Amino acid sequence: MADATRKPYDGLAKRLVISIDVGTTYSAASFCILQPGKVPKFEEVLRWARQVTPDGKVPSVVYYDSNGNPKAFGAETDNDDMLLEAEMQQWTRAEWWKMHLRPSHLPLVKDLVLKPLTGTLTADDIFSHYLGYVKEQLQEYISTVYADGPMLWTSLYSSLSLVLTTPNGWEGRQQGRMRQAAINADLVDAGGSNRVRFVTEAEAAILYSIESGCIGSWLVPDANLVLCDCGGGTIDIIRYQIQKIGPLRLQESAASRCYLAGAVFVTQAFDAYIRVRLKDSQWDNPESIAQAVKHFDRNAKKIFADPSDVSWVQLDGFKSVAELGVLRGRLRIPGEDMASLFAASLKAIKEGLEIAIDNQGQVTDNVILVGGLASSPYIYSEISRWARSYGISVSRPDGPMTKAVANGALAWHIDDVVTARVSKNYYGIEIITPYDHADPAHVERAAEAYISYYKGTLEHKNLWSTILTKGHAVASTKEFVQTYHAYIDNNALNFQRSYAIYAYRGSVPPKFMTLPGQTDYMRGFDKICTVNADLRTPFMSSPKRRSPHGSTWYREVSFDICLIMGGTELSARIRWQVGTGYHYGPATVAYD
Image (tube, rainbow, N blue to C red; front, side, top):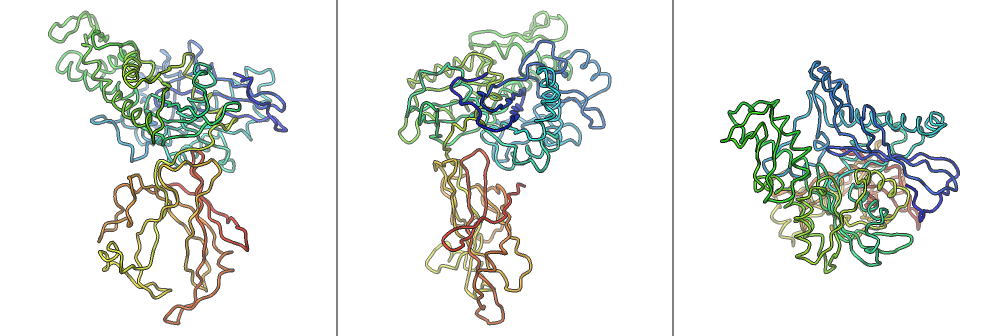
């Protein structure tokens, strides 16, 4: 897909950009070979190993043998011969593993649990194996599609840029694990980790929706659009204001939201439902249940449209059992029961949309629905009915939306359309401050105050210091800065310092991060990452001071912690003043 409005690539040499959308249930990959002077053309991998019919998406499924070795991936796991081999060799099926990467602050839908991982394998292991499979498929596809494919891949592979998609709620910790998985998969080497970038699935989807031409009449300066990506694992909702047309520029106008309530949880709700319906029957066994769930997932779930409709799910055999509602091997499911399976996901979608459509007096008129769950006739009709009550228009862009996120990720990387985003949380660090006799919060903790080794004054620890506030519009290049101080012994030999960056997810952060007399952080504080820096240079330029007791010489080193949140990945660094300017030290960010 080449966009006539996109500018020709102005680089001096060919480059390969790859985007991979690893979804909870399905995955896709796109690529773009940037050529000097030519308009970028987006292409999709449309042929995967053992795929009967060419398609842009493949299952996010891996089969493992008893030793934890991967034996089959993607479309191979739907191949009849491979399935027989898996049964004979007793391979284990790993699916929905992406959800095990989720941040701890994102709760699952009530009463639902994730399928456990295979043996001793971790989600990181499976992610690495799966990305390795996608890499092989990309190499095979490019090598066979282009006349000079093998030479093209060999010349561009070592410097490729990789874009990975994430749900809205994934943060630096999850991105760090995904980056390491890409390194383990040999998509990039350790030295090229900065060539891995991340974009939210919702942001990629809205860029694809705009390029599809289906919402052209909505592209008006200052208009607000809400993108609701109803995926396999998550419901991602994000709101944008259109700043400019030609070239297109978007700005987040409300903080994005993420709910673990995607399509897989509808399937899991059916799994729980059918186990009750078929209890103590001839179908009350793992094989029959698994087959029924598979049939539901591929048929009844996709066509259910109205609670007045009756749905049928195929069971083993052709037996009829009237009291169970089974007719010739097919289970009858009343429409009300079917609707209940979608209830939790539908509630999450409506809740997120209600928050997004009216934010700070800016009313949204248009909602874009994408993702596998959005293709459900029932979900679409219910959201459309809900939207009409608010006077809102809903668009579900036509076309092969399975490639929307992968192609949109390329557009995000190449076009840089989004100029600002809204911070979802408060971000800051833990600090030590002088004891304040006039502050009730300090007085309440008077017993915890201590005398500073260097300054000889009373101090309190565990206080919160905000660097970036919640709900703040963050330009893609703007730094948020706070000044701090470190006290270092004059005879010190080690100048490495580490500062943990925390997010506070509540409405207003408290003064202290702990409760009186306790050491654990209060609910709402989460460690995001650690910024490490060498303070040797600012130490050498700081004046020497003597402690009040006269036995210790030390230096008070002033420095700034700088956060950049304009992209989809946190960037942090440390700087100090040199004359009238600033010097940025060799700082690195480490994720837990």
